[in-house]
Length: 118
Image 1 (cartoon, helix red, strand yellow):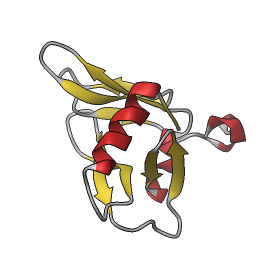
Image 2: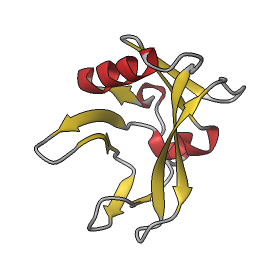
Image 3: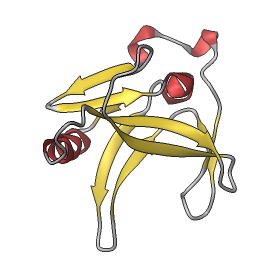
Image 4: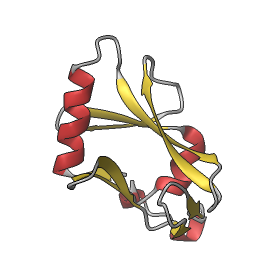
């Protein structure tokens, strides 16, 4: 997973405002009309199997259960007239619901995995 300049800057800014928090943790869970949802929580600890991404002052953890769904994903931060939000450009996403709150993800297969995809 990679971060755009905007995403790295936003995560770093938010982390600086949260004493004791070590990282932003990204995961997935079952839910929504398309089947899965991205999760984002503040992590006070780094888990033994968490994937760690450190980029331009941002520290992002990937939940071990989500790694195969997030390989090759680019995390961005977008602001428009009505909202500011993190956006995931995920090649493993097969569809999304109309409101954009849930997605249909397929894990990367061993044939589709390349170490550079992280």
